[in-house]
Amino acid sequence: MRIDIITVHPELLDSPFQHSIIKRAQEKGLLQIHIHQLRQWAVNEYGQVDDYQFGGGAGMVMMCEPLAKAIEALSLQNKYDEIIFLTPDGVQLNQQIANTLSLKNNLLLICGHYKGIDERIRQNFITKEISIGDYVLSGGELAAAVLTDAIGRLLPGVLNDETSALSDSFQDNLLAPPVYTRPENFRNWKVPEVLMGGNHKKIDEWRHEQSLNRTKEKRPDLLDKQ
Image (cartoon, rainbow, N blue to C red; front, side, top):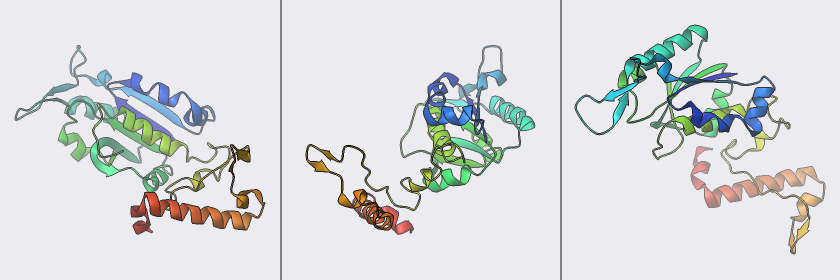
């Protein structure tokens, strides 16, 4: 998979993609991440990519021309399955969206900044708008990092255990069950006996029951989606 990201602050994306699972995904050749500085397509020699909004109001707006030129230039090199704008008013990211996007080949992510991007870009280029929550960030870079991580870890071969992602929270609209590791007894806090017995059928049943109970307690809204 290839993910291209257009941003005015590429340095904000340096660290998230240079460590842990996403780093390994790139080293294995399973995921390519290319970050593009929008100012390459600025309207003047000063690197301008934003301007005052028509009608007045506080906050600058990212201009049509730089974004259009960037999207068109990159689209000549790659055929994108989705051109995604990270925005607070997009559809809220969930595991099902991550699953679907992980099946794509090429994605282009647009990081908003300032007051947002010119609406004409959204109307004429963007194919999907995604939010990572009902709050506002300083820009779309952190949201792009979250989306890339959620997608990248699902690619076949990225995780050492192929079944690991399948048991993540939200895969079946259930939260993940409790997990334990050594020692078996810590401060007289003991691991449930069923996990120590080696009966995988009973373990699977226990885990499902725990997932269900945890979801009922913490996120009952997820049960309505089943």
